[in-house]
Length: 331
Image 1 (cartoon, rainbow, N blue to C red):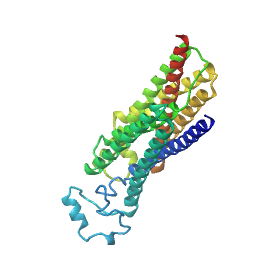
Image 2: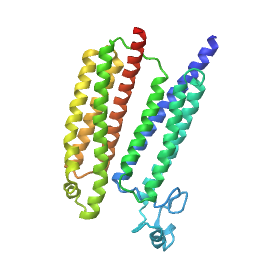
Image 3: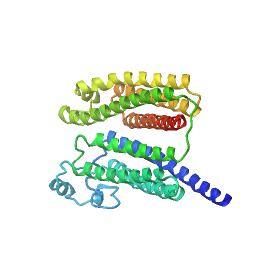
C-alpha cells in the first residue's frame, strides 16, 4: 500500500511540473503572438503550413525564385515582399505553437497516468485543452489563408484564453480544496469575482477590436504616424480607454474583500496578483497611447491582460469548489 501511494505521488508531481511548464509556454505563445501582430509579421509567411513553400524559410531573398512576388500575387497575396525578420518571427511563432501542442499532449499523458483511475475530471479537462489547441491551429491557418481577416484576432485570443483556463482547471482539480469561510461569504465573493471576470473579458475583447480597427485605419490613413491612426479609430477606442477604470475599480474592490474576509493565504494572493497584473495592463496601455503603439508594450499589454484573466478565473473556480465543499458539509 505504501509503495502504491508513493508511486501515485510521484506521478502527481510529474503532472504538476508538466502542467506548470505547459501553462507558462501558452503564455509565452500569447506573448510571441502579440509580437507577431504588433510588428506586422503576421504575413511574414504568406502560406501555411510551409513558409514561402519551404519547411525551413529562407534567410535571404536570393533563396527565392525571381518571380516569387508574381507567384504569390496569383495566389491572392498582393504586395508580398520578403522580409527576413518578419518571416522568421512568424516562423518561430509557428514552431512555438507546435511546441505548445506537444506540451499539452505531455500534460494529457501525465494527467492520465496520475489520475485516470481516481480523478477523471483532470484527464477530461486536459483532453479538452488538447482539442482546443488543435482548433487554435486551424484558426491560425485560417488567419493566413484569409490574409489576417478582421475578427480573427478576437477569436484567436479567446481560444488561447480557453486553453489557459482548461489547463488551470485541470491543475486545480488535481488538488483538494477546503476553506474556513461561511457559505454566504463564499457565495457573495464568488459572484463578485464573476462580475469582475466578465468586465475584464469585455475589456480584452474591446482591445482586440481596437487592434483590428487599427489595421483598417493604417490602410485608410496611410503614413507612419500611429497616433494619427489611433485618432481615426473613433468610439470603440474611447470606450476601451475609459473602461479600464471600471475594471480597475472592480479588481481593487475584490482584492480588498479577499484581504478583509478570508483567512486563506492562497485566495488573498489571487487578489494581489490580479491587482498587480491589472496595474501592469493599465501601465502598458498608457504607454501605447502616449508613445505611438511601440511593439513590445503591445505584446506585454496582451499578456498582462491574459494573465489577469487567468488569475481571476482560478479564483472563481476555487471559490466555486470551496462553495461546493461547504454545501456538502451542511447537508
